[in-house]
Image (cartoon, rainbow, N blue to C red; front, top):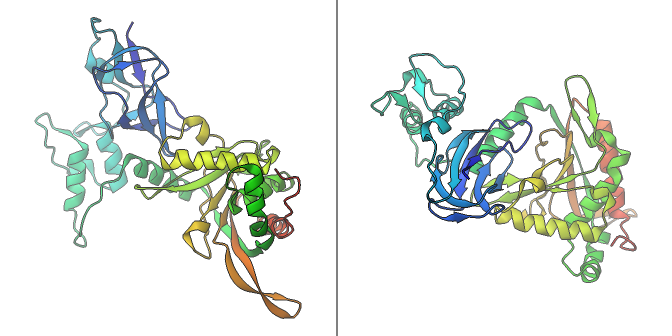
Length: 374
């Protein structure tokens, strides 16, 4: 039986995705449930499993090609089965364009991103159809400052850039910051790590405390819609991780974080961090965050003001924990402190509501006691 490999709809608002890598090559056997290819959306790279067994007889979409949701991108079949017409399978609805301009789906998308007029590009193909390479060549010839080099965007980098640009047009951002004393947290981490059987980080404590506080501050666990502010029931904490070599960001999720112990949060965070760095996050690990924590404490920076994620109203940024001078009893003492920042969508809440949450979090951090948290 022939199985058409279809580009899946990875999220409600996703209409296209990029084929990142084929994990099987033409002619190789494939088992149902086996990882087959990497699909890249505006959130992250997702490894997609095969829905049928057989031989990967034909790959219809090459790596790094942008494909509409629902389009066939490969065929799995038995060695002796006759395959259907390939061109008919590739056909997909395309946006209307001027009759005199013929361009591939990816070329239209790229031209929009680079601000290049399709009608001004000379096609390289004999049939007059513009390709992505035609668009790139035209963009490179545009007048401007001489370039040292041109670094092509990876599929993940392109997807995340599109995602962030969309957020910039939707969210009205503002932020509040303050300094918190982490001395009690840092003092407790060695014993907590020993009891939990794995490293427990300051980030894990912050996630644990923030998750417990968010039900008391519902506007920070919410999002804006055209006719209402939507308050989320679960507290699903997204963890923003920088990933290389793309110099990009992914945000996997700890679900129902307010109902989990510190040890459970530390364990999940460690697993998600490993999956993020190895580019092995699956769709379930990336879906449904309601609030995000962006931990940049490992970068040895004092302040970090992050960008609010899509369909959320707030994000917490954590800077490095350092030894700093602090006032104490009309004198100066040294304590381990870090700067916290909450960026919020001003359409959903005001600075007073954001500051109220941030002060509550600061108080919880400074009063942190390890008893009963594991």
